[in-house]
Image (tube, rainbow, N blue to C red):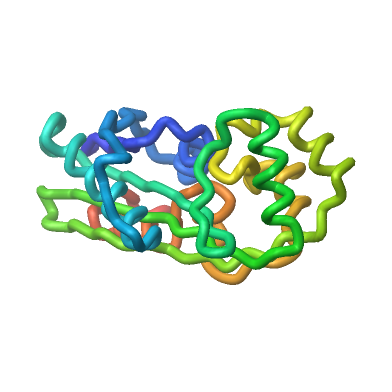
Length: 195
C-alpha cells in the first residue's frame, strides 16, 4: 500500500483521517507561512496548502501527500491564532452575530498516478450573538490560543457558537474538505472494494 502523508499537525485533520480507516503518517511541513504574500486570503490559503504539499513531496518520494490551510474572515479581516486570552475574547466579540467566511486551501499530490490537485473550499458562517459571560467562559475552558479565530467548531463547545453554515462542512469543522479528498483517494486506488 502506498504511503499516505498528512502534511499537518492539526489534531482535527488527523481525527478526520482516522475516521476513514486508512493508515497514514503525520509529517508537518515546516514552511514559513508568512513568506506566502497574497492579499486575497482565499488564494493565500490555497497557496500555503500547495507550498506545504510541495515541501513534503520533495522529502518523500512515491507517497500521497495531503495538505491544507485554513483562514477565517470576518469584515474583511483574517483571523489567525490569538496570542493572548484577551485577544481571543476580542476576536469572539468581533465575530459575535456576524457573517464570515472560512477558506480551506487544499493540496493533493500523487505523482505515481498523476493526480495533483490544488483547490480551496469555502464555507459561509453566521455566529450567534454571544454574551460576555459566554465568551469569558469559552475562553477560560478551551485551548483558544491553538485555534485560528479563537474557536474550533470540531468540538461541541465551539459548534455551539455557530448559528448557521453554508458550504463545506468538514472544512469548517476540521480544516479538511472531505468532499474533495475522498474522490481523489479513490482515484489513487487507496480503497479496496468492500463486498
